[in-house]
Image 1 (cartoon, rainbow, N blue to C red):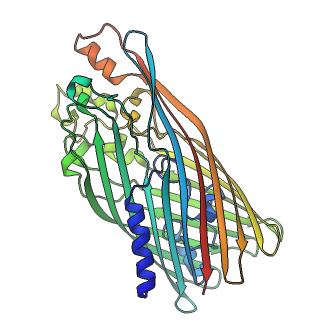
Image 2 (image 1 turned 135 degrees about the vertical axis):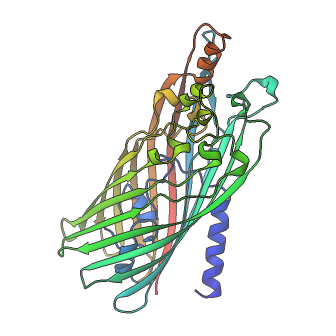
Image 3 (image 1 turned 90 degrees about the horizontal axis):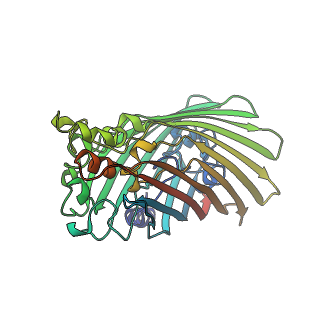
Length: 421
């Protein structure tokens, strides 16, 4: 890449480091790249973009020479309804409801069989900012409650055509993540420790096949990425501050139903249940007195209690004219959060399960285009017994526990400029 290209990448990466706030399919975005975002995230069998490193590395072999640079305005609305233990209820809304999330993709054909690419993208979503101490007493000195998780992934890509119809690809994943928490004195995390970071290296593998003029298929898999530990939060996350990135796999098919209409369907599985700090039940803390491994920071220590997520993505693309393409999509995922773990997930209310999307592309010239995408995710909620209430009962400080509810809804609107060379 030349100096101009490297500067673009630096600007995008720096912007991502300012704090992504995704929280859709768990804490993974519902899609990567503005075209995929407009189709409910369906992308594994699509070759019309430069985001192979995030979606399916093999598609880079058919994507051609292109750049794509965009930004998404993401607005999650999150709240927690908590009890005072005496019948009173209080709804507290998380602040900081608007975030700019950049995206960058690059792809270049090297020869008849080989293509190289670069994708810069982010995960995140454990990002809340409540203006009161929901998980600690005011006497502890806490004034706010919240966490901020950001994962930046740089994915160089190599794709190779086995023949004119089939290709394989690989993307090394260079990962940097940052985490911060405040207001956790109620669980013995005091004082607030500020931001911590860690890094790791993973890989994404892919296959793409053009089975006929009308049907293409794709496969993509990324094993669990072992990350360095958050040393400042060794007493919070299970396994002494471990926070790995879960394995995730996807399979997709794209069908050219008519000369102007294409339908794409993906199935994705995200294995949150394989990462102890994400998957361990928050109720594990009640076994702390019998085994230190169940205390905060232990290998079996309390986590967010998330289950694996299954996602179905359905997208429709209509070539309305020679210069206008329209898109629509639907994304349905299982909810990783259970009522038993509602208190911990006040920090990370990733309860969204449905996404409705619209999008389109306008050709500015033969080699340049403008793409937009809109997403609406209706409010979803989870209710369960308060963990703090159960702790108070166990310690003889209360006669009965109480319930808590976490809620979230989302919207996003993004635009991307792309050009071919």
